[in-house]
Image (cartoon, rainbow, N blue to C red; front, side):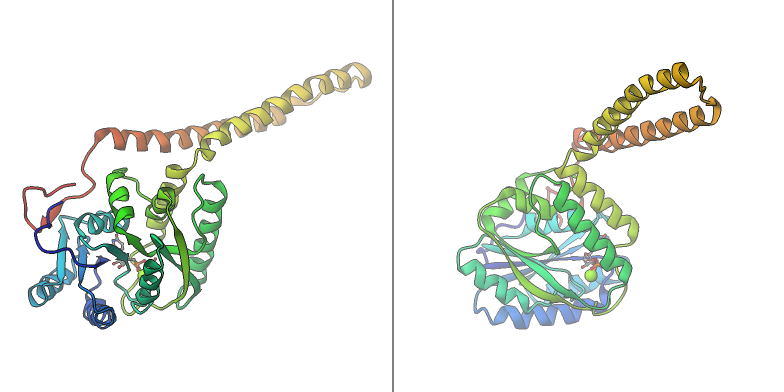
Amino acid sequence: MPIKKEAQPKFSIIAPVFNEHECLSEFYSRICSVMDMTHSSWELVFVDDGSTDGSTDLIRALAKKDKRVQPVIFARNFGHQIAVTAGMDYSRGQAVVVIDADLQDPPEVILDLIAKWKEGYQVIYAVRRRREGESWFKLFSASLFYRLIYRITDVKIPLDTGDFRLLDRKIVNIMGSMRERHRFLRGMASWVGFRQIGVEYDRKERFAGQTKYPFSKMLKLALNAVTSFSYFPLQLATYIGFIAAGLSILSIPIVILLRIAFHEAFLGQATTLIAVLFLGGVQLICMGILGEYIGRIYDEVKGRPLYVVSEPASKEQTR
Ligand code: UDP
Ligand code: MG
């Protein structure tokens, strides 16, 4: 890992940034006042995920003024989960806090997370008790998403938790060695194990600007979560196959009986067409599901780095 020269700070705060210039100064000062209360050394790793609104220059300026600020600037937008991954790769603290830069996760909650870490927990995730200022659609889709993931995945991912959490160095190192590219970090943290606990908090409104998670990105994250931690969609094809085959086997004697006993013939055309179209549709959906998994295998096999950084410039610009 590139930055390793100076003494290891006690805490690392990782904030992914994608076009958040209106939030950055306020975020920085809130983090400073909270972290100074800990009387421990800390660093703030800003991962600039290809911002185009001047956030990059703001981060550079903050880093120039304050040596505790570590800028990691991406060569383009790689997405939130990858930005957090890069932050973890570049972080050096004994405990690492992942927090959004838009102040929806109040920095003051970090003190509660740290208290639990000192009690001996390795993963302390922040559970959303209430969410303010978000559309009903976001609340509904998020709630549905958390419950669906909980039901069908093999690892138990706690409900109503985002990426706002504290991770012990041990966990960060293990997650850093998991280089899968379609990442669902919450699931990966649950998968690692050790002692994990939740701390409740009220999620606030965005300080400024709009969400950087449009529906398409949310859908992508949901698909990554499902495919990374469950074979259920693949097994679905088997279940549907058994049901369809079972029904058609059952219908053979019924049709023969009706024909012999009651001389009733099925007027076939419409029923046949509907059956053919229905099964054709089911088959295409199953092929699509297969395709989702095969595409992901292909991405893994290519073995590309997860991201490319333009700063800090070093020999190792990809990881
Ligand atoms: N973000 C990012 N890359 C992206 C999208 C978002 O680094 O492609 C950052 C964003 O700047 C913010 C955090 O991830 O700090 C959470 O994003 P956002 O607040 O837009 O998501 P929401 O809270 O609406 O789910
Ligand atoms: Mg937000």
